[in-house]
Image (cartoon, rainbow, N blue to C red):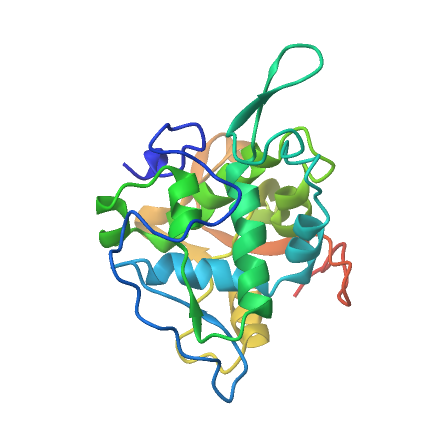
Length: 262
């Protein structure tokens, strides 16, 4: 099941902060080519991890996510005592678990930014998820995987100075409106979101996709009529539409706050 894909506490092998010379998932590594004219670094496909690779690339090129992630120190990640141990003991005697997912994300991001090679391996990152080989060769629903990955990162960040990173970067809210055509009353409902399902086909750019989504009014008629509480719960024709109310902070050149209405 998708909800079982991310388990930082799963004991499926030793965790080491420092990279080893061998991998449990490959016997002989092919030489990696240097970067080409794009000067960008990709990710090797472990079998069917192209959907995950696309998410990782998106996170890497989101400065509001990448820079706070890099700001976490060895102390924040519980790596100071012995970086080769996946758990340590604090001064109070409680166990401190290494934040494996965050450590591996930091390392993979650094490799993709600094190494002169065409592609990097995400094996150590998926190992930190607790993934087995079958989970890297099965296609997953990328939309659901995105939510689960955000949840796993959020849990791994608990107790650090970046504990609210996912919410601050990606969480916003929409206002859903329904207007009864009989009494003209408008009903509002606010919903939180971490992603927006946009239609990209026949849309030349992101702005057009957003405009189409948030200017379109759905007609609720026939079998899809709205039950209006102001009209004695009768079924009535109605209009339904949505607006972006707020979105995540953007500290690196964008705006934050409310879109108002489209």
